[in-house]
Amino acid sequence: MMSALWLRRLSFAALLGLLASCSQEAPVPFTDVGPGLAYAHETVAKVPWSIHVVRVDRADPTLSLRTAHAGGGALGLETLSSQLKRLPATAGKPVAAVNGDFYQRDRAYAGDPRGLQIAEGELLSAPSGGLSLGWDTNGQPHLLELTAQFTAQWPDGSAAPFGLNEETKSDNMILYTPAAGTSTHTVGTRELILEPVGGSGSPLQLSSLLTVRVREVRDGGDAKLEKGTLVLSIGPALVRKMPKTVPGTEIKLDLYAAPRPLELRNAIGGGPQIVSDGKPMKIHPKPSDSYSVTSMTERHPRSAIGWNRTHYFLVEVDGRQKDLSVGMTLEELGRFMARLGCDEAMNLDGGGSATLWLDGSVRNSPCDGGERPLANSVVVTRASTAKPTP
Image (cartoon, rainbow, N blue to C red; front, side, top):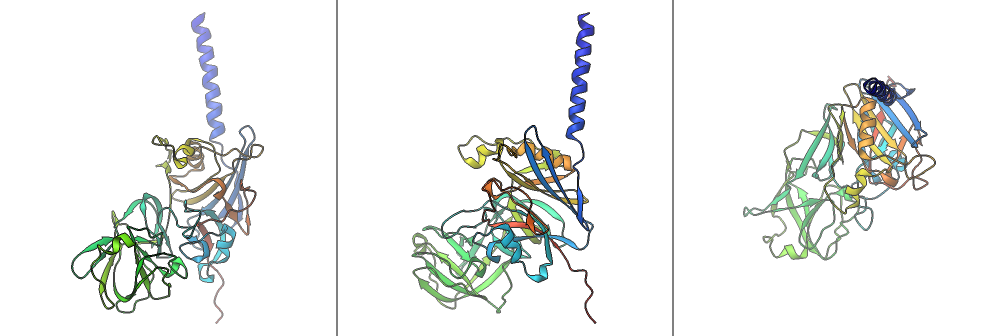
């Protein structure tokens, strides 16, 4: 008698589990919004969740993904909508976008991405050891963990590490490119005004070796940034350790990243990875009081990008709005990305930054009540199919 009752209870529990599983695996209802492009807005009232998804057909030759940065440079903050307006006409028409990497939010170097950014081959921000998503020259996506090992090498054989387009401190050395703005915004530093040997004005590229010549040595900081030149800014505590440098000195700038990556056309930082080989990942943050760590297991607004062999998925989950959507933990986000069919997926910046744009407008409900100024973004563009006039 007890055995039969137990079996009936077990069968009923198994049936409930099966029904729950089927419900979780129900397909997301997409609507076509253009060739190769589909959109879904899914709501789950009982949580509640409000989820926005753009699906991009990788086989559509008119669609491509690239990164953008506020102001069209390497520093600064700007809303996602404004970043899209700055894209050059040669990029094609922006049709969808999502916010990108975590970033410095204030002071002179606001908008400095936490990790790697490459925009159409130009290196804007150095990798920092965290996760990045990069696209090679054939447009294929790759998840990478790269660490910058940039060094400036003097004629006497000495070398010193340097960073890129970020704050110069007393004991470090930073290379600035024209993408960082009109000047370095440094104070009390020694700055070497550099010009490429051979007169090459090509944008900086990751894992390249560039020979430059010192055109000018100046003290005080805040050197002007001009097209065709670079500025190497040396913190005051480091100056006395550097070899004597005068105009005409040639320096080699090694932009090596370990392990040496593929040749990347575009790249953006983020993380952690939330789907691997089609399976949602368990998130085990290390014990820490840091908000970036503790928030992984809390429900917040989220953004992510994922893909499989046939499609990309740009995803935004609204949050911090109890009547609309409470947000997701990273594990919940990973499970949703896997349900979409992603083979791989990476978390992006969330909170007030979480923004999804489609066909001319922001589709989600940002928790700040409107668009927050951001550092960078991932953009889907459509190439013109119009035939040139003969």
